[in-house]
Length: 383
Image (cartoon, rainbow, N blue to C red; front, top):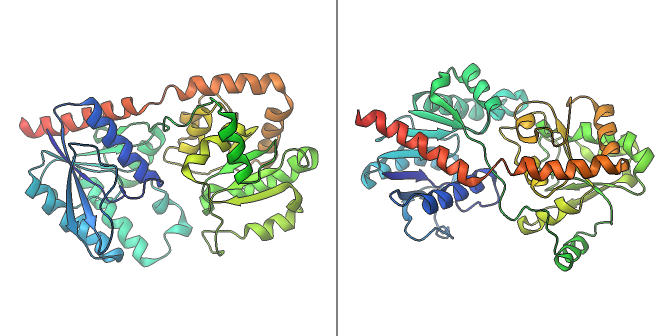
């Protein structure tokens, strides 16, 4: 089988779509000897060629103009033309950006419908038009892959795609996320970010749906009891300006009078994230909606107690290995955080369960189940 795959995010290895694309290709290439893979890549002027492409995987650059129009041109015209020229048997777009027409059976991965379902994200006309285009392309695909059963249910409801044409396939954490500690490396990383001996961690984005404001409200309760000894560490790029999509976090922190209990550390290098997870007392992920919720799985893989929410895909990832609370229940969130800190037996139990739950998610399984989808759409064409 010859697979052509849209490699738009290959040179963005720290984005969710970039990680998914790279790990999927890596494990497909490793596990399936008779699978030929061609990466179709939008070549922007002056951009470096994709790095870390596995030996034997072909690269097919397509000269592309920068900007949103260039992106749409590549997705709708440049990419399918390259797939036809390459002679692909199956075409896969590993993010929500598939062409309306494909020269071969088309598989598209729709990670989530956040940009469509959160009103604040769809106010601009350009976003509405792009969402409509992507919805049409997904409906025309031979098969849709998504990251969870919760996302599958939303796709059925909002895109009106039959359930039989949608397969939920879980993601996995990178092998670097593990509880084993190298004390010298960990100490150096903790010093790099000026982290205290004890802390509670949030690591992720700060868009509106990430629900960080509820975490801050919860911290107005936690801080009174434990904030002096266990500050809340906010990791990830701090929004440069406020908008409908990005609340004014600094103003809200001042309003809650929790400045002394909260520490911003900003962007975290990918290689340093496992150290931050495994040295945290607790990882909190208060999001209102996720297609999967990879940070929760990364924390679990590091053996860290997790407090998250009970919505969309997050309970599927967490299992019984942590606390899942209502995303609007700041008091419940605070109580769960405090419990993981002050109850030693509970924390020990959660650390044990975390590793057991994380072991249920592997890239080998992701690649194997994805290959079955490829075989299914190609088999329908052959018959």
